[in-house]
Amino acid sequence: MSTTWKRKIEIADQIMVAGQLAATLEVCGWPKPGNVHRTSDFPDTRFEHFIAGSISLGPVLWETAFKAVSLKLGETSEVKIGSLIKRAVLNVKAWHRGGNTHLGVILLFIPMAAAAGMTLAASSNIHIPDFRENFARIMESTTCEDATEVYDAISQAGPGGMGQVLGGKAPDLQNSEAERLLLEGNLTLYDVMEVAAEWDTIARELVSSLPITCTVGFPILQTLYSESKDINVATVHTYLKLLSLYPDSFIARKVGLKYTSNVAEAVKIGMKTAEEISEKASKILQLGGLKTPEGRRELFKFDVELKMKKLNPGTTADLTASSLMLAILNGLRF
View 1 (cartoon, rainbow, N blue to C red):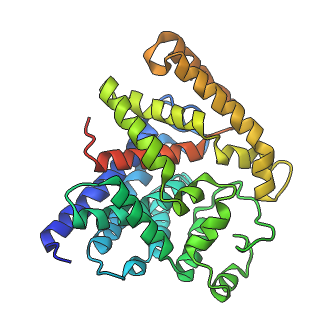
View 2 (cartoon, rainbow, N blue to C red):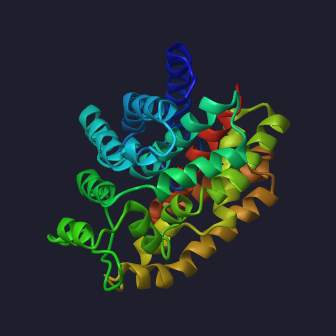
View 3 (cartoon, helix red, strand yellow):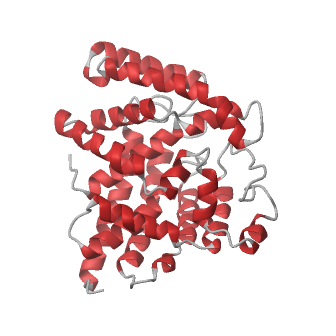
C-alpha cells in the first residue's frame, strides 16, 4: 500500500473524530422520543454519561482506522475486530459509571472505522459501494477468536434484556461453555451475527453490509440537513424516519421477554408493540415533526409516553448514530 505515514495518520484522525462527533450528535438530538437526550435522563444513565462514552470511543476508533489503512492485500482478518470491540467497551466503562451506553454503537462503529480506513486508503472520499464492499470483507474475514472477544465484550457491557438463544448454531451468551463451543465449532463473529440477524437489526446490518445505514439513514440525513440547515432537526427526523420504517428490535425483545426467555420468540411477541410505536413516529413526521407546532407538541408527548412505559428505541438510536458517522465521513458539516 502506497499510502504515506502522514496520510495514514490524517485518515485515522478523520475517522476517529467522525465517530466521536456522530455518537455525540445522536445523543444531543432532542426530543429523541424514548431515549436519553440533552433535556432528559434515565434514572441511572444521564446525558453526561453518553457524552463521556462518545468521547472515550476515540482511541480505539483511531487504532482501528490506522490498522485498516495499513493493511496489505489478504490481511483483512489482522484488524482483529473482536479485540477492538472489546477494548472500546472497556474504554467506555472506564470513563463513566452510567452503565451500558454504547454497545450497539461500538458494534457498528468499529467495523465501519475499518471499512472507512480501507476505503480512504485507496480513494480521497467514501464511495458507498466501495465502503460497503470493504465492510463485507471485514466482517466475512472475522475469526472464532473475534467471536469470543465480542461475547466477552457484550458480557462486560452488561446490557439488559438479552434473553437466551435456545438451540441453533450459536451458543447462548450466558452459556459458561460459550468460548469453548465457539472455538470448537470454529464459529466466527460473522457466523454468530448471522444467527442473531434473525431477531436483531444491528446484527442484520453487520452481516448485510449496512443496508439501513447506507441506503436509508445516510441519504435521509443528508437530504434533511440540506433542507433545514439544522443538525438537530436532521438528527431527530432521521431517527423518526428510521423508527417509522423499521420497528425497533430492542423494544420488541424487551416486551417479548416478559413472556418468554427465548429471544427469537420474544421478538416475535413484542413486534406488535414495536410496530405500533413505528406508526406513531410516522404520524408525527406527517404532522411536520419539529418543523410545525402540532408536530412538536406530539413529539414531546411521544417522548413522555415512551419513557413512562419504559420503552426506549435503542436500536433506532444506534442506526441514527451510524448514519451520522457515514454522513460526517462524506463531508457533512454544520
